[in-house]
Amino acid sequence: MRNIFTLILFSFFFGNGLAQVNAGVPDDIIQCDVNNPGDETEIFDLTQNEAVIINGQSNVVVTYHITSGGALSGINAIPNPENYQNIANPEPIWARLQSTAGQGWSVVSFQLFVPKIPVVASPPDNIFVDEGDGNSEAVFDLTVNEAQMLGGVDPFDFQFNYFTSQADALNNENPISDPEAYTNVTNPQIIYGRYEYFISGCEVEFFEFEIQTDGALGLEEALLGQVALYPNPTSDELFLVFPHELSEVTLQVYNPLGVLIMDRRISNTQISIPVDISSLALGTYFIKFMSEGQSEVKSFIKK
Image (tube, rainbow, N blue to C red; front, side, top):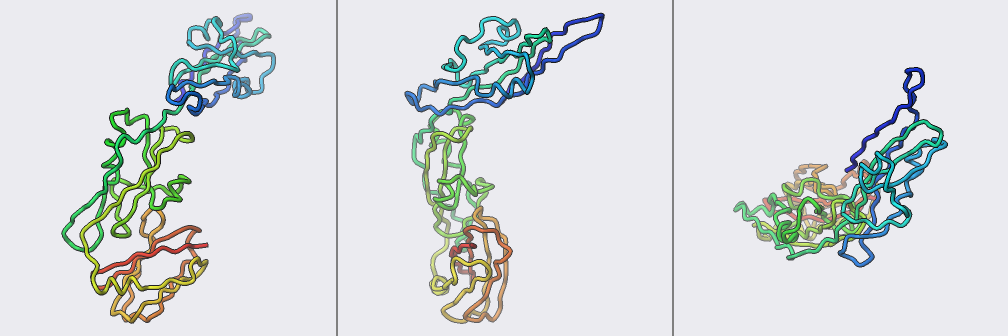
């Protein structure tokens, strides 16, 4: 995002070049659009990264310019850089580091950004995938609603992230890693999302929708729904207590991103089955029980 170039003016003494001024590279400056929201203009202090530009050098002064030509020529400096209102978004600013001891000058650039305010033009639709196999599981493209939410604005200005819990969406943690090919862990399942400018940290729109696939609840699934987990939260071992013994059960554990991290098949099950979770990182997980083509998903917390 940064257009950086450094031009050094050489002073020549007896045929040898001497150029000692070298500007440091400043960060771009971001201001949220809070003053008259929607106009994409804010007041910036261009000097906030001046120490980085000076880069520990002495006998230097910094001026700020709205054109590269002004910076290269040392003319038309911004008169009040501590109180500058941007005239474009994004807007490049050129800083000229000038030696006061005859050791040349250096020019470097950075950008001013006022993140655009996202607006959901049309709420996302629920997504249904009919695979015809009745196993209550399918692969979903969670991004299919993005065009209608954008409503014609430039998609390159904004980003979408998807989450399996509302808390993760609010905190911007554990986004789904591959939203174009996501396998559900419950049926139906609520997906939570964030819609914001490609530089985050300002206005955010939250949304949610439901994904569902074919597969109806059967008697065995109803029984699986009576499975109890304890203790929950837990740190080392989780016990699954079934309403009765089953001929065979498959246990799968998924992390908050929906990635399968544990897969066990147990024959001639006991009513109570221990599951070692001591190696898992702290957080919320989903455990899926499958038996005779039916399934149930519950969540547990590793503390």
